[in-house]
Image (tube, rainbow, N blue to C red; front, top):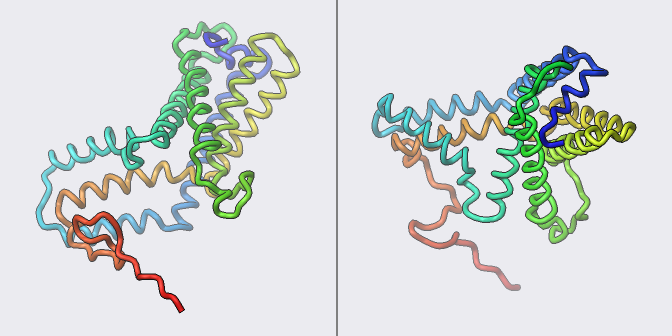
Length: 264
């Protein structure tokens, strides 16, 4: 199973060109959903306006080399290791899910576009990457969903409560899980079951990539830009010139000043 390209076996019944077309449609849905999200929420306009304000407040000019170094460090450290989450289980689960998804999608793209024909010899590396990525996504995602989520019960909500913001993670987990199950049943010749999970795998991908506008999918594009802008602003001094929030903690303090409770 782990060393078998499931898309190559699938091409015996579904032409590889159809699989490739499906992937291209999913990419198109992501692009369309992201553009609609940008138009509706005006995130890009906000970033540009924020960058202009920061430039006016900058206390020094950053050189090209320094900018490249800051952007590179941000991508490798802040984004690549999700350092904003600090050390702990939540960060580990997020890193597992993030890199698992990257491996899963990369393996899918390579196997579908390069090795999906019936006679294609797929290097063992790519099916292994695909299966490992799906497993890592499931491990990190389900760990987060069942054990590390906000305690909804403490907020007087049902533990089974699902909101619109959960669409991305649930569709991603469904895609990875159904993909693994489809591969398992296909490799073991369990016909009927493999068809069922193939359909579920396809549907979960349609929901995942087609639901960009309604889910948190587009945040994957915004957050890196926000992190880079923040670090550049800190480096040129423009962030230091912003007014402090009303409830900002005292300098070097451990907490936030709060109004004392009033008793009547």
